[in-house]
Image (cartoon, rainbow, N blue to C red):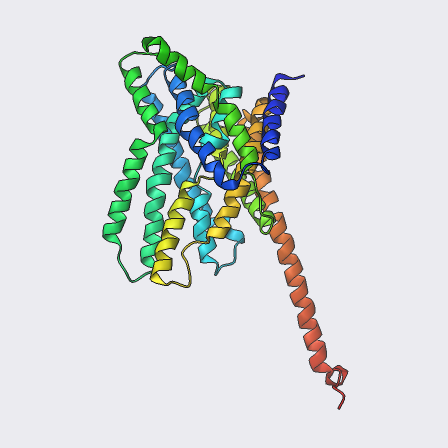
Length: 383
């Protein structure tokens, strides 16, 4: 059996075990597993990976590229991704602008980078995630508060500044960011894993082993898709993935000297699932609006939950597929072809719905004209 296919089946089997555990694990209990992943297992993996790379000033390009992707997708969501929404559905449009440009690589990307591309690629992805976190934690919060202040007569300047300071502190105090900072400091002094005491090395390496199975089990246990808006959300995620493929193709054409591993990193990292941080910002805004007695809200939180529920399994399957057939996805022309094809495909349900609606309206108008021309044909009520 092909190595990539074997690895994919192993990963899917662990996700399947997570699905079987759904009945025994309450949804509320998943928070503890998520904290264990993001605060213990993932930092250990990133720390080991960081200490294996050679520190260069050119590595700053990775967080800059990630932040650039976030900003480009923010504009794409405003003018293109939300094109199939009703023009008067502003709450959903703002919700999409918060969620679709954000990335959560910790749960949907990093474990597979380790398995398929190795720890060097994971270290570069961890550096890129710094730019993504600046966007998700700070810029999106500022955007959410800007929309909230536009829609209310009250000014929440002091509260906003306090919240922003708390977000900056959480950015610094987050275990993953602490690990990245410590790892970069050690690299700056020319130190690696061998410079650490033996007991500390063994502890970090033992915790590191937990990463992949924990994340895969979490994905299986967390998937609880609501089917009310599944078709529409699925088309949005396909369109998001298609635009991302086109952007990856552009960067691959722009830097023709990149190796296969770097191209795959450019392809896989931005295909990560939507982040939970924007949902936290939207929930905070909704709480303030409840206190204000508002009847119309800035964001549609139920719609946001449905997107998050669909995004994680969608990105997981997509990333596994890309890495399983990596020879295909290192070609810029193939990336562009896949991207354009997915964008076109995502509009098919919208076009079909529009066609049926216009056909129904036309038939209704024809029937109305026929009724006006033949008033006697209208059934009369018996006395």
